[in-house]
Structures are given as structure tokens and as C-alpha cells.
Image 1 (spheres, rainbow, N blue to C red):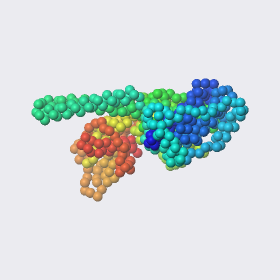
Image 2 (cartoon, rainbow, N blue to C red):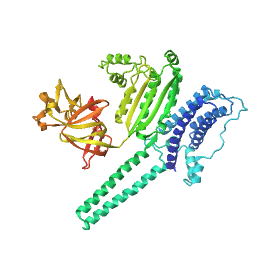
Image 3 (cartoon, helix red, strand yellow):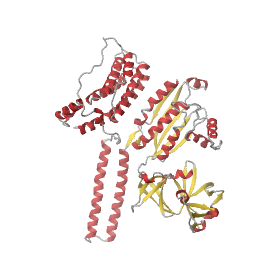
Image 4 (tube, helix red, strand yellow):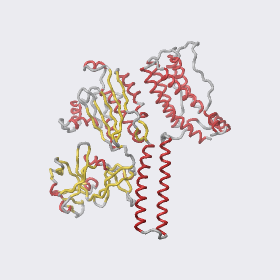
Length: 583
């Protein structure tokens, strides 16, 4: 019975977290439209549900706080109490505290009441005894529902409750660790995968049949080869459909990620005396849940920066001839196979002079005429344009987190900021998580993979086309001069390029002059934004689709690799991040 309670309580906490997020959204909307009875009832239902379910699991602290907030809201609903800013703040504080109690519950820690918060709510409540209050009326416990469904017996429920009362099973210990998140999947997506699994069985049986026919000599070799090849095409199509189906199953609307930012904007605006209209667009855009989880923290930094750095105070906006209320837009959309996320504000824009001054103070050299390079200084760790650190920003931490996250997702960031007109930050994230098209190349005795989206072109060059300036190599490529680097030198610390263009292995007599390239060099042209770079490899092998896995612990220190893939012969190959070669 305890195992079943573990599962039910884990589900309850997960669903309650979702209810808390929805309740916060209701409260934000109520703050703008306090007479909206539908929103009041939705918020009331969320608190009531959490209170009742928490009571079954003997999570009395959670139940009590939900109960008191429910009482407060009931007074508002019955027009006995004004829906003031103090009421809104108190209910928000209750939602936050209940969320923290769920965290403590999962960590196996004791739960305690927040007496100060309860007194704060009591002071707001109408003290008249004639007021009709929400009372703890008996409700159907979760145990009765489970018994009714035949999931457990009444004896099981009574035994569990007795164990809880005697302290044998502390409520906090009933929760499973939250290291395996769940995803709600629509039934039609599951049925699609079920149909595909049936087709995979057909493909397997076809191979088995063909092999049997070959074994008994009933079909000729040419016929067998054609049948095997046809079935391979069928299996290839199925593999692609299965991959796409799994991708679809793991997709969730960005609304679940975006919802919580409204509360952040509200709190910052109230704290700094600003008016901010927070607008969400493309909430139904779907994103791989893993990508969404990774983007959550960077988006928090970006929203905070926009509210704190970008948007001005009411006085500053008046002086600049702008509306008192600033505008902050968080937008999501699909563009081909990419996810596009934009954070747009109509604030003061990026102060380029201050950025350059801060960079020079750190000893960084930046071309002031290169606007893209100047704007990208905001992503340098430890560099901030705020003269004074606050609890929100000013320590130069945050924007570098954004860049690191986007790089880890093999995405791109673009910043646009006309002075005085606001800032637009655009993140482009590839959605093909898990399976990638790669370019397989060889350098020395090793094989390497480059993500195909980073490859612009592969070319063959005459060694005489390489030019050297000091210690750097360059080539002419389609009307522009671009840098040239050697993959062996980048990935092998024992390899260096000698004067005259010779490659040499340290502590050995092996040399690799340009003349040894048999009259031509194999060069992969890769891109990072608008920048191009040539990478010299020994051989191009082929393009292929493969599953990319995280780096094993033994290879975690490799600065150029993003993951690994396994070839058909079982060989493990590093998947390189070509953007790192630009550094």
C-alpha cells in the first residue's frame, strides 16, 4: 500500500504545482479585472482542491495555508472584502509558501506553518462573527475515491492512515524523488506510436521471411538483394516516423514555461515603481520539453534584464516622450525546424558607450565601429552596465548563462537595440534533438562528426592558395578573406604548424608539408552567425543521420565536443561544435 501512496502523492504534488501556476495566472488577471467572477472561482477551486487533497495525505501545514487563503478569497467573492493590493500580495505569498512546502516534502524535510503569514491574512480578514466563512466540511478523501475505483481496499487505506498517525510512515517520506519528470501525452499521439510499432513488426517479419527463403535456396541472390533493399527503404521510413513520433510526444506548449514570468514582471514593476505591460504571443507553440526545461532559467534572466535594465521608470519615460507604461513582449514561433523565441522591450536600449568603457576597464579590445561585437559584450561574464549591483542585476551574471545555454542547444542569439527605442533579443533553437545529420570527416587516424547545420560547404583547395600573416592562415573564399585552421592542430596538442606551412608532430620526425596534400587540401567551411572559417581535414567521408548522445564522463573535459555518436561498425565518434573553433 505504501508504494501506491508514494505514486499517488507524487502525482498529487506534480498536479498541485500545475494548479499553483494556474492560480498565479488567475491572480495576475484578477489584479487587472477584479470583478471577473470566473477568475475568482477558478482561483478558489485551485485552493480548495489543494486543501482537500493535502488533508488526505496529512500535510496539515499545506491544508491550513490553503484554507486561510480560501477564506480570504471567499470574503472577496461575497463582496465583504475589497480586492486590494494587500489581498493580492497575501495570496501570492501563500501560493509561494505552499510551493516551498511541496519542495520540503520532496526533500523529506519537516513541514511548519508560517505563523507570520497566517497573522497577515488574519489582519486582512473581516473580523465580524456574522461573516459566513468557508468551513472545513467533510469532503470525499482520496482514499474513498480509490476504494470506489477498486484501486485499493478499505483495509489498505485504514492501515496507511493508522501508520501515519503512529508515526511509522511520516508524510514527507511518502514522496518519490523528483528526478524523473513526467509529460502528459495526448491519446492520438500514443495511438500513432502504437500503429508504428505494428509496422516495425511487419518489417522485422519481412526480414525473417527473406532470410528463410535465402537459406532454403528458393530465391536468387539478385532477387534477395532487391527484396532486402526494398525492406531497408521501408524500415528507414519507419525509423524516421518513429523518431518524429517520439519528438511529437515530447513536445509541450511553451505556455507552461511562459506563464510564470508574468509574476516576475509584476513583482519587479511594483518594486521599482514601473508600469509594464507584459504580452505573451505564440503560447501554443510547442517545444521539446527538454529544450523548454533548459531555456527556463535563461529566460528568467532575460525577463529580469528587460524589466531592470531596459524599461525605464514612469518619470524617465515621460521625459523621453514615451507612454508611462512600458511594453515587454515574449514571443515564440516555429520557423522551419527551428524554434524562435524573441524578448522585445520598448525601453532605453543598450548603452554602447558604457559597454565599451566597461570592456576597456577589463582590458578587452573591441572595435567600436563593429556594432555587433559591441552589443555582444553584454554576454561577457562579469561585465555589467549597472554601476550599482542590486538584488536583480548588476553583477554581470545572467547574460553569459543565456549564451552558454543557447550554445549547448546548438542555437544562435541575435541582439538588436536601436538607441532609445528598445531591445530585441532573438534566440534560434534547432528542434531536431536526439537525431542529427552530420558530416563525417577524418583527421589523422581519427574520425569526427560536424553538425550539418554548421557546415556551409566542403571545398578542395590548392595548398598554394593559403596565405600566412604572422601565426595565422587565411584563404580567399567566394570574394572574402576567411581564417583557416587545421583540425589536427585544434584537437591534438602534440601537433603544430611549422614555419613554411609544414605540420610536425612534436618529439618525432614526422612532417606534413603542404606539398604532401597531393596537390589539394580538403577544407570544411563552417559558420557562426555571419562569420566563416575554413577547417582543414584529411578526408571527407560522407553525410549521415545518427543519434547524438551526451559526452561520457571520461570525455567531459573536451572543449570542442558536444556529444558522441555510434557508427554502423560500432565505432564511437566525437560530435564537434564547430562554433568553438572560432575562439
